[in-house]
Length: 470
Ligand SMILES: C[S@@+](CC[C@H](N)C(=O)[O-])C[C@H]1O[C@@H](n2cnc3c(N)ncnc32)[C@H](O)[C@@H]1O
Image 1 (cartoon, rainbow, N blue to C red):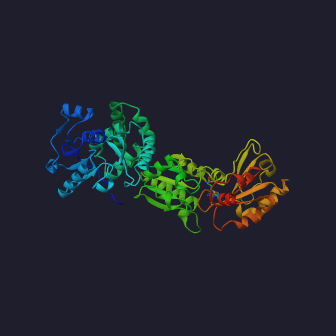
Image 2 (spheres, rainbow, N blue to C red):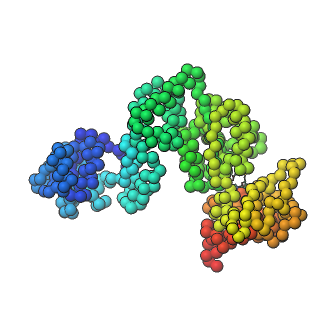
Image 3 (cartoon, rainbow, N blue to C red):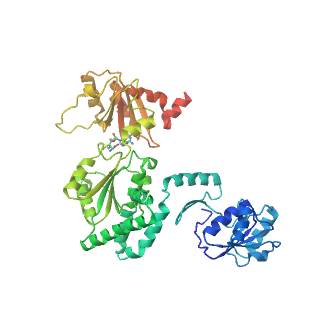
């Protein structure tokens, strides 16, 4: 990192701006907003700068520039259209140890100014380290769209409530703000006027103080779908939940870059199921959720894919409900849609498939066999989760049900991850496809005529590269 980011308090501090044209005007506008005492050194002022000067909002020196006009300034901007003068200003400021910025001349900048998303008092400053101002502006556009316009009003109201909230003990206070300032509430508050925001926040604090006298506040559990293993496929709500969580109970296969989205001081507990550890059994996970929520904590139960698709999310909610624990569910991108998308296989297609079934290949001992002939066929798609180890049995059952041995099949392993592989074949090849799957990688079978389209429509990873080379 070449530049150290800081926010400076310039209230009533002198800032010298050399130049009085359009470039200077842009800087002066922000400096006035920050409460700085702006000293402009320029022979002439443009209309806007002159208007500020006439309104007494800045001091103007029309005299010839001498380094002395920088004395006492906290910052200096050289914004004239004379490159020689700007460099002289740079040298003079450097010799006085005053941070200086020659506008649009990175080599002559002791500091640079970021692109800004302004939701005063919330300010997001973005820098590309001077490498690409266009990129920094693009990032600003993305962030602009993410932040509600009324965010500043909510932040100011939260500031006004800070002293009153200080009666709560530190950890409790942090949890109160964490719970209160979630995206849905902020969006709702941001549409109100200041008085209504103040009233809503004060009401929330009063409820919290009442709960305080009733003992430990209730925690809650957020069941979050982590998707197929790419941080950029997390939903915004999943990111927010991870940012709020005090405890994260996660499956073993959730990759590190997804866990990095979480609060750094959260407690991470790997509950990936391995033999022999009670915390890693389903009953152990149920207990952990209840235990932490009862201690007033926000618990994120982070599961691969979608929590309600072969994720035992339903059982976990039943347990929470039975123990009177509040919960929320955040959907995730499930393996079938992720694998299909990243393998270029449309799960439905007007000409090839009118129905989609998600099924597990892992039948419970003594469990009844599904009606395979109804689930797979020429006009429908079957996505089989947890089927790689049962590939030979699956092949036999599908053939016994009368399905065509040549019905196309794709096996996607590590779907949507950089290590993704896609193997194409047909029902009769199921065991051979499974034998090619890398050991330990999760794999999903997609069966139906759509599977074949992936050979043409692949766009991601090795399959697409091979196709382009052909
Ligand atoms: C216990 S299930 C969990 C499914 C998860 N809840 C979901 O919605 O994707 C695990 C199975 O999902 C499939 N799976 C999960 N992630 C996958 C991925 N990235 N690529 C291929 N298959 C995946 C595999 O069939 C794996 O055996």
